[in-house]
Length: 255
Image 1 (cartoon, rainbow, N blue to C red):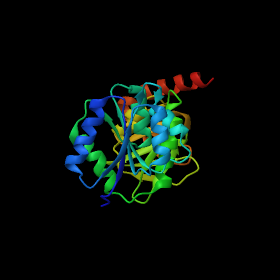
Image 2: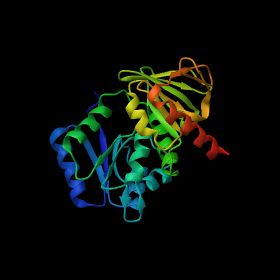
Image 3: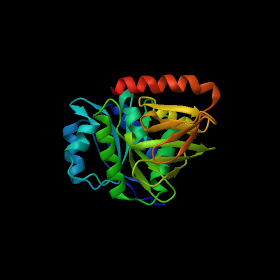
Image 4: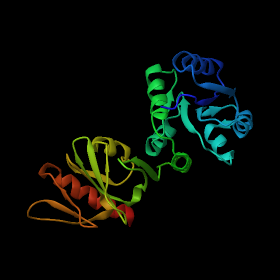
């Protein structure tokens, strides 16, 4: 576990800074707080000079946003934990990008869990910067375009529109993706269903979630849904009519 972590705190609310400083001083005394900033301008100046390992970054600032800070930096080789009071549009982007965020007022158990996740992992700056890049892209769209997924071997970046079919087995799910090998990730199907609710996905069965854009045919005999790429999803009888209606609606939207 890395303990000599250099921290920068960016928040325009004094009590927010004090809360984070107090928690770190008490819980992680080996951490070194390099400094604090309360605006986009002062944050960019500080982060351009400081060699931070971890940045607590408020989203809403008087002269812009935490995302503006990241856009202005030429190098982002640090971990980020975002803090926000109400920015709901960004929360979905965080989830898509697998980046931690804390809601105000702070829950210190959540803060501790977010910090431990960072100090316990082997740091990969290139991958984390890719996550930040994905986050910045996702915040620019009403519907995030890219999802970040952790497998046993790697961190994968997947375009949502390329996901063909997701099949679950308990707390694990296999993603069938256009032009790529299948991915096995530690997420249940309900998490994916909630995450992808703004896209044309339909849960055909308790263990199957399909992208309607990739459906090739439905078997009249056994109710199987045949997907592009060859994967097969089960269609439960009680969902058959709703599925066919959703398919028809999706075709109309595309036309």
